[in-house]
Image (cartoon, rainbow over all chains, first blue to last red; front, side, top):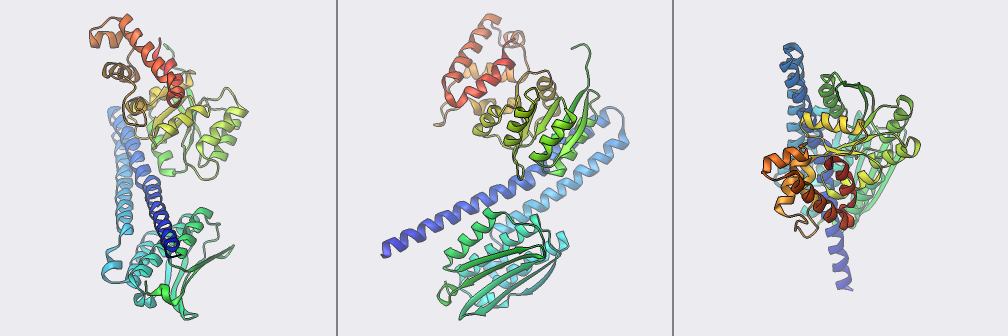
Length: 214
Length: 209
């Protein structure tokens, strides 16, 4: 019985690690890899413009390539801080979510309503798990939505705790991403629900009292 | 080859910035004209049917219908269409799937400009083209050992870089007959392995003149 439970927990952890590796590979492939390839193409174009004596076009293309290079740099930094945010370890879940929200607000113009102070009372495992769920839910919302407003709350519910991420991005979300979020909730012994309407998507994760202290 | 007729191309990539870079790079080439852009596989198929470009430059990973599926669909609808896969993936399995889907060329997104132009011209002319940067990875078996000898690999790389048999012979101080004999061995070895068969078929056109 215990062996079974241990085996199941191990299998879930391995799957979570695999999902995390896939997520990183996708993020890097979709972001910096494409941007750097585009920069190479643009510099090729600029080189040929200069070669032909067309300095004005050359400069315009170089400026554009510089802009894309800066975008790639920001992308990489975001991926790095998303892997293991310092804020989560040092300041707790509420600060880590606030930092994530600040970044998206600055870069994508999303307005956030946060009520997440309740997250700091959770155990390390629950904080880290919920952070990943929030991060991936926001990532998907921004990719698919894109929302103008997102509300994130962590509140007591049914003697456990409830995380809600509500956004107003109207587009369908990728099923695989939603399934991965549900897996993460299951790893925390929690339940997961998501609902997408033309008005946006609501994600609800409930953790029982025992899981919240993990 | 004396005349350089215009080659029309369609760009299919879900990243707008990649299409922009490619468009800027190709704009400077008098013989190439971009006649359309598609952000996904479905649009690529529809535009290919409508505009009949000489070459369709196709990303592999796109939302909805991906580049492999789109290539298969294009080949089904227009068996004469020429697809050049343009991707950031260098894994052999994907190269093989790409070629099996009917694409005539496979090139990495960071390929130097000259390689890109050569790939477009070769594919437009009905030949096949595999990015030279992929050659060494292609001849490795799954356990990491190389199916080719060091000399064979050297020759393969020179040919992949665009040298003729005569150029290779001159560079290596061997006869053209010796080069051809090496090429025959290379093909035999690659074709003997099911995992490299598609690559071998792609290389055959490119290497034997």
